Image 1 (cartoon, protein in one colour):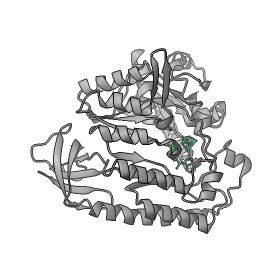
Image 2 (cartoon, rainbow, N blue to C red):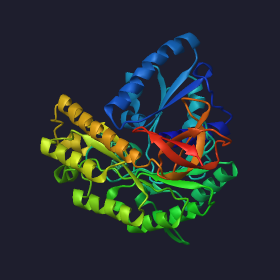
Image 3 (cartoon, rainbow, N blue to C red):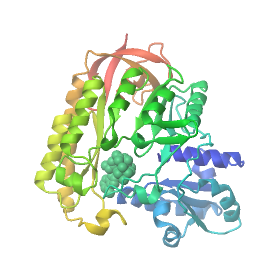
Image 4 (cartoon, helix red, strand yellow):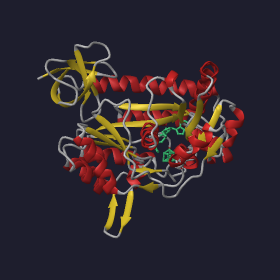
Length: 427
Ligand code: SAM
Ligand code: SF4
């Protein structure tokens, strides 16, 4: 999401005559787009700001701005605490950046953090940078109002709002014309995408179909689905289109009914497993990935075991695994206690990581001998004689180059694997 937002910021500033520098040493303005989801994300930014002091001393004139969720969360306070920060801009205020930079040039320090109920940057064509020219993100909605008890996003990104579907389709068409072959539609909870206009209503399944119809050569992915809203209708649309990738990211957060209730997730483990069963039934080749939090408030060994059991039952292909980090202003901070000792959180997280590593390896071993259509994304980091790409299930496959090029679809048979990567051969 931040990556996509940075591309919007680039578009806004490029239009005003600024350009993106590949080298930080040459930049007059350094814009740091930040995350506030866990404390360590914010600490990394603080560290980066300390490191940049030397560059500022050396260069004399260079202005640093903090963008995104940390800017929204801390607002002016961030400039008071970090004296080398000249400006702070929240996620809904990026259109103000050109006017702000003019004033900053004259020596002012500014913070703009007003959240909007309507801003979607729908009319802005992102400037793609640091891109492989093959895969791109398209933001389809902003904000979130699910208020999961642990999560800062509703406070830093504001209320949920959907983007005009026609602007999304046009962006996808533009990308295909430029040679892109895959788009990922982004939102905090894409299943609640909803657009109303005089000509009717568009929900997420219809939007997926509209984007899939842009071109059979364009793969379509999406992230993220909240399990409470994952409908059979969406799964059926996914089944209908070959170019909608068969991969669903379905964050479980915990396997314990008590924890899920405390987290305000609005589903039970049984209901979640029912959704997994629906995915297998309607999309038999679909891969499933997840997010999980270890050590949320009052989590017991029994709750933790329930999470491990969930992992054993679903057998995820990939998981983003986190240690709970208490965030200011959330329901958890106001009403619950961060009472699981840090060493217990770490140990539980390590147990989840070890189990998931084993499951991912076993899942990948079952792929040996299977043949997939792979979209080639680039040259392998290990050897320039090899290429890498992903299959519809979002698994990375590395294979010998032969005559293939990035951007092409090739057919690859899997011959070997590690827990993270499949290794194959073009057939
Ligand atoms: N909207 C998505 C959803 O509901 O699944 C996820 C958004 S969040 C940016 C990504 C992940 O960060 C969450 O799924 C959760 O696992 C994790 N996360 C959020 N708040 C957290 C916290 N306070 N401590 C640890 N992990 C957290
Ligand atoms: Fe955070 Fe929950 Fe919204 Fe995801 S759905 S962004 S976890 S509040």
